[in-house]
Length: 364
Image 1 (tube, rainbow, N blue to C red):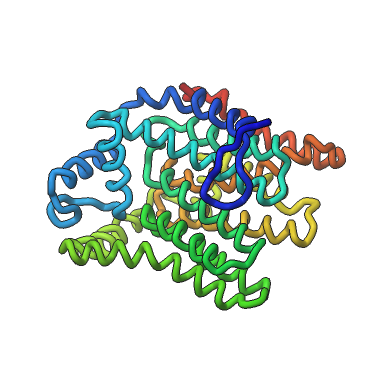
Image 2 (cartoon, rainbow, N blue to C red):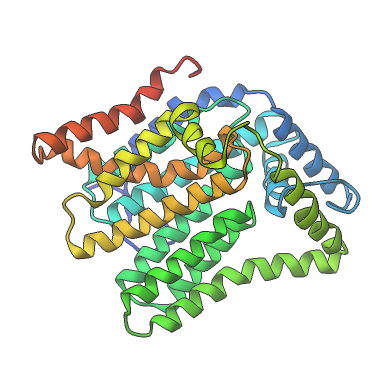
């Protein structure tokens, strides 16, 4: 009999034969990152974390452009694994492993076969750890864990209407927003999906989702108010960041910039998204379409998160990787079940777009 590993979500346990390939992929793909040096950003965040652990007040006594969870996650790494460069890499590896487990659970929740669900988790890990030392262990990658937890809980709440599950989903998404705010647009899209479905007590569902979302934001605001750095934090976020993010990065029109970024700078992201969108909505029942719509709104929120920052750095793409891995897994079903020659060909091509990254020159 297979041993099981319980997770605090309440949707079936994970058996070891399911989790072992994800553990193996995490070790094989993630182990080389443990010797990566700091990039400029990681060095800055580590210094802020060290300073705040020594009693310096963030935002007021040491400048920090990021929301509070960025230096908090570095504090956790330093306290847990020691004051060394490898600490944030160790935490990042464990963090992305947990994210991959949630991706596996989401795939199972939307009705994907076991192998396809494992495929989605492994594709996410591959897409993440293929990035260079500067791009990973960044704020945009850390927010994937709470957001995937929020999506899983939302799907669970859609299956069995329980207001506390909607609230828990909102809390998870709120925690993700405390890493970076643009991803918070997801809560708007999910609320609209609830209202569009017109289920019983849909307004209460939206209310509890919103209450859950607002809770961590309110707690964070209260903590900074009591510590005396809220005014400095608000100035940095409202004034400094807005000026910084409006500086153009490419000498192109905005529409041409978006096309150029998605299909020239990050072609796997652009073409993979096109194939993934096809995979989402090919051959699903009405109930299946509703689940796919949740993934589509997640992907759209991640794209908005990427675009609205107006910098188009590699690490800004990281929130797209989780929904994209799940979208690509639908193509895997088309391939394995031989659903017609055209869908088989589309599936093979889409999968290749994601997997060929393994042969990239910059893979460790």
